[in-house]
Length: 171
Image 1 (cartoon, rainbow, N blue to C red):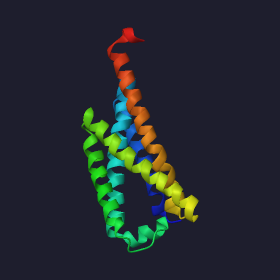
Image 2 (image 1 turned 30 degrees about the vertical axis):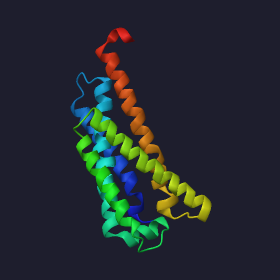
Image 3 (image 1 turned 90 degrees about the horizontal axis):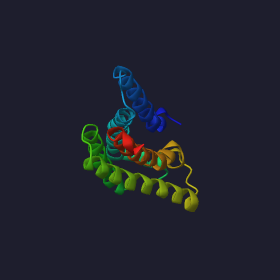
């Protein structure tokens, strides 16, 4: 396995480090909902945003190498379409770093549908073709399935905690 096979994990680490650095900087009187907001902002910026743009670059400019790492045939024209979908989601992620509310919900929906769908596709390839290539059955498979769920859970938790903090009588 090459270092680039672990790039998705590097994005997770950077998002966690950025989250903790910002929390330490804002430490005084920081609320739970603010902590969740900081975490989500870093997830949107690094994992969804930069991760989506990274995937766009790979599927577009290094298509044959990426295809081989996934266990796909090289020269697959769908690589360009997958790359553009990644670019769209990456841009949504970058914008969601600061934009909140309905915009983030739409980004979560788009990201989750694409990634969970990709994860199911990886599982299907494992079952039907025995494709155990590193970028089909390795860290990317787990990231495709788990990161959308983490984002959904933290978004909903953040909304709940914010309501309780704004209305302490709801406790």
